[in-house]
Image 1 (cartoon, rainbow, N blue to C red):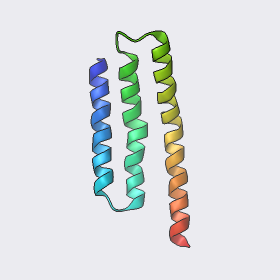
Image 2: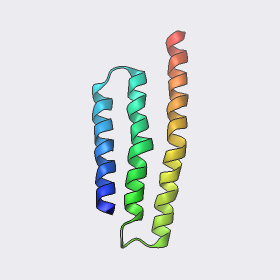
Image 3: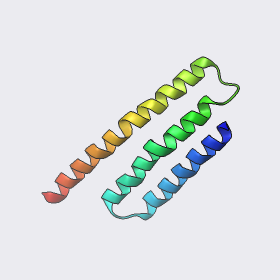
Image 4: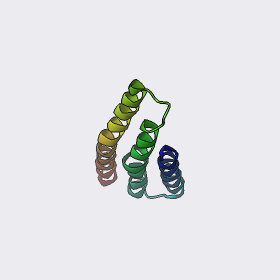
Length: 90
């Protein structure tokens, strides 16, 4: 199960990265950055937490990193979008 979650997260991250590179609109690019932090990161985090050889402190560290990405990712994208919008209106 852990390998499926890790590969699913990696595929979402790869898709978001590819779309990010191929898109010119800066606001649309932010949507693909969000996919990486809101969808891909929790999938990879859950997969790494379920790996059978991991100890409890490995799981705690991975979950903390995943939680930080999940919480701060959307806020970072929103702040960047607001700054880009202000810059385009000036």
